[in-house]
Image (cartoon, rainbow, N blue to C red; front, side, top):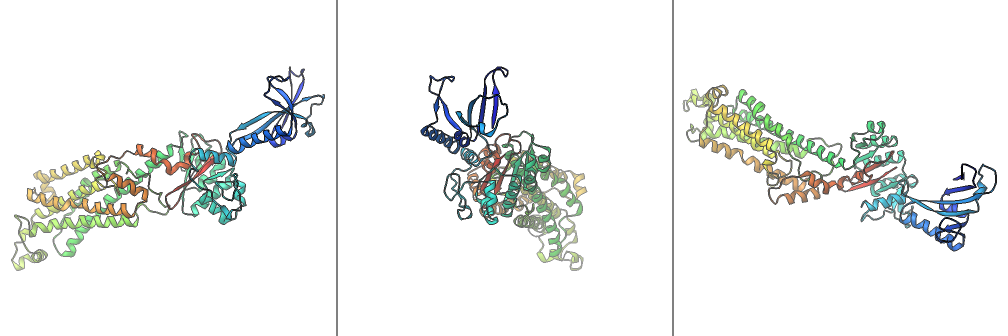
Length: 547
């Protein structure tokens, strides 16, 4: 590109200034302005363009472009000796070379690779021989660390899938390339996040599992995204993912607590019917347990702190429901235990409790014929003690089960009960309300309960407390067989004692899961976008943000 300029408001001598690709400009130069003093120029002298000087300038261009990953422009000039004001191509000859300008831009492959290495994206990552080594990298050789959009188009579809799954950097990509990369990664079972702020990012933002737009981006990009970064800070994504996973985990724990408790009540009622014994609980007692004593701990579970390994877990599959097969099995196991001990407390009072009737199992099952055989007083089966014990066992075992709901996989040895003070307060209020109906006569008459003795309370605790051990075994199985190796390592380190969970401290060390999203810098340029993939092995292979 050339520009004809004149000094002194057009009255002075005219000069033709030229800028362009170094190779093209140097071909048109017959001289060069050097730094040697003594010339007519300001602080330099004009030398003839010798072969040695031309080779030295070409070497400097290579140094700027290949080593420093800069976009290089050459500058030159020549005096304008005619009165003609239009510039023709043949006028760009006999130029005097002035210098080189190196610009750091993001739209070439060398710059993308250089930035990726500086931020650690390519650290320790070997090159990939895509398509059997048909394409050569910028550094030579059959392997490559990045691809340009044009090189990506030249690959066969199977090799495109190979590149999408193995390469971490793509440069000079168009909107169609971004969308294609998202589709290829999703086809490989990866969970894909895409960031962008321009109109050209919108198709890929829409196709990605999680589209993330910049707060300063276009309205089209925001509309196509699932999340908008109001502060334009990529690091906010880490905090947002952590908060989202924490909310999701607490929702699962809430469902787990409520479902396992309800399964326990169902098991208790049906077991009485199947065994042919009197009903353990009456409808009023069941309503009290469901609406009052269960409700407070269930609400407080929403304040659970996140697990220490929450950011080391693999992303969920898009097809995965909130209740998976293993979690449903855990529901059944805990619920069956709750129901079994509720019925067991009822049977214990009839058969073995001090001060109880001490009847046999056969007599208990034959309660409907007590008048006929006369061996047992029918008034025994109207006593309020057994249903009171069953109701108390159900309440206390569910309080212990609420402590189990502090975490899906983390042991109470690592995540102590006081990590959620709201839950402890809710449990305390629920137990206090239950004691109120036991020991206040008008309320006791309303709920058909009586005050329990110390012996009966001891049996209640003996039946209720083991639910913690049952769930600890289930959590151990989850940690051993259901978690990724990274998450297992964190869980093992937490078993050393009562360790508080500090998500913010771990967030800085665990943010590598979303490294690719952060590679675009603090604010992102217009039209920029980045991709991140999470493979089935839990490793992250990000794609550098491109303009």
